[in-house]
Amino acid sequence: MGRVKTRWLALCGLFVLGAAAAVPLTSANPPFAAATYTGQTSQGLPIVLIVNADGNGLAAGSYVDFQCGASAPTRHYLDGTSIHIPSGVTNRSGTGITAADGTITPGFEGGTVSWRFFGRFFTTVASAPGGGGQATFPTGPPPPGSSPPQFTQPPGESATGDFSGRNVTGIPGGAGFCSFRATWNASMTP
Picture 1 (cartoon, rainbow, N blue to C red):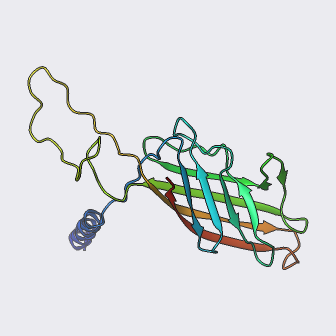
Picture 2: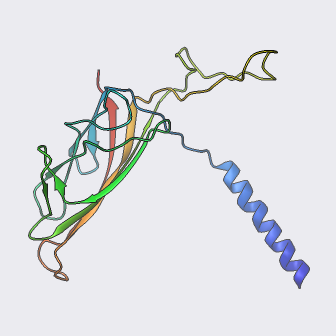
Picture 3: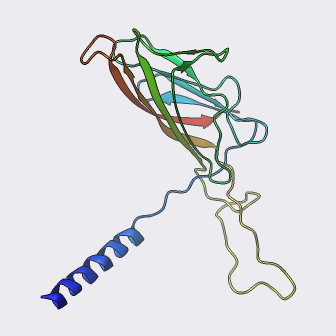
């Protein structure tokens, strides 16, 4: 019985490894520094992402509009959200709705909004550093006396992600309780 179990586990392990190798990895790229990305959420509302001059965070004026339950569409500002470089991924959570002036209101009808913003930037066409078509990578060892090439991710001209959360009033099933999840897509504007 022990040998059969060991073989079965080995077979399952090979299956998992094979499945993992068959699934392509989704890559992310850093955003263009000082660029503006605009788009729309799955709720049909706008999203604007303004990347700071260093390319590592969202600047003033960045926001996502969302609707939670029967509430009117609400604007939540995202300035100060960091972007991981070089991966071009952002993941931030918090409580309350941030206004343009930085003030935070708890939520709707005496409740508290807990939210999470996730996004990644990516390029739609793979290209070598500096542009010029499909990426090519050197093969073989580097020439004597030289160092190995340093690969960098090209900046991404598109972004996608989601914004989700819930408003909790503390009253089970009471007025004001709602939850939301809006996926979004944005592209760099010229």
